Image (tube, rainbow, N blue to C red; front, side, top):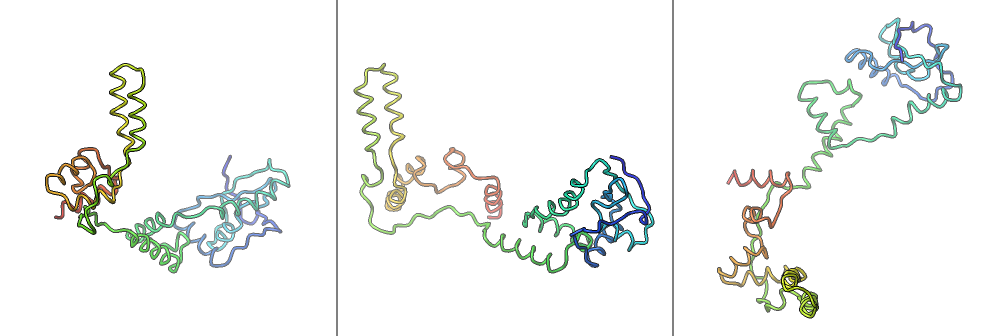
Amino acid sequence: MKVQNTSVERLIPYAKNSRVHSDEQVAQIAASIKEFGWTNPILVDGDNGIIAGHGRLAAARKLGMTEVPVIELSHLSETQKKALIIADNKIALNASWDDQLLAIELEELQLEGFDLELIGFEEKEIKSYEDKDEQNDSKYTDKVSAPVYTPEGPKPPIQDLYKKDKALELISAIEAAVIPEDERQFLLDAATRHFQFDFQQIAEYYAHSSPATQRLMEDSALVIIDFDKAIENGFAKLSQSLSEIYTRETDEE
């Protein structure tokens, strides 16, 4: 498509254009053109009738421009022109903002001293996005602490720490099967995966146990006291963001 300059006097606005441009918005478009240059040519049909760009034409007139860049779409039918005039405005309205990312971008522009009104944002809008960003930040805490296990009740019986019914069924079936001994041993070892641990009860049992038992429970990943050790042994894995928080906290101590 070829961009060419055309006199503003030759351009003909669409008489039934349903998109309304307020004086305030025209002023914003004019300020944008002054700041960034003409980045979006006006779309016209083969007879200089405007398909898209009525607001830009009004802004050009406000700036005292005599010529504007246009792209001619003479191949469109009357029906297509009518549809594009609406689509050009409506489709853009169907997009939405990622409020968190927008707040970050607006803040960075402010820090650079950029006038945000040039990109169409009013002060009250900017404040609302800043407030949303602060609310999102307040939902989280940078504090990552290892759990402290203290007794809350009596020490539970050892048999209450886990259920092994499913594992015992498998073990019985494996022992009765006619299979090579190496396969049998492998399957017997694998059957222990079906032990169901009650970690709430395990935590209570741990709190009542001797230091030697506690150490062995930690090494078995039945409880986690030392995050570094758990991660090193492959028992736990932190997301990148959580890892950064935990590393920062550890460095500060």
